[in-house]
Image (tube, rainbow, N blue to C red; front, top):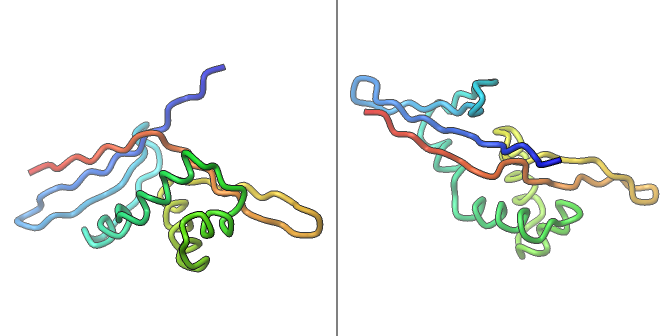
Amino acid sequence: MAEKSKTREITIIDEGGTFSSFFRRFAGEKEYDFGSLAMLRKLLSNEKARLLHFLKTKKPKSIYALAKMLKRDFKSVNDDIKLLEKFGFVDLVAEKSGNRKRLRPILIINSLYINLKI
């Protein structure tokens, strides 16, 4: 069975000379309020783009393995993954390895649309 395409949409709206933005799932599901463009910039940084690329191509078994692949600090990668999870880009799957539990990050979207309405 073919996997259903998952898309996210970001809309930025001019409201009286200032931009406000909101993030919603393309299908009209739950909406997220960014509050400011600073959050959008933080979400769409070069490091997060690199992280998403590694999730798509390398499919790491854990956040720790991803941090090693990226040659970045575990805490920074973990914080980035949590933010991407909050906005529906990534899902964390709990797996047990011996007595330890690890979270495997999985990329769950395949496209992102950004609209600027003026």
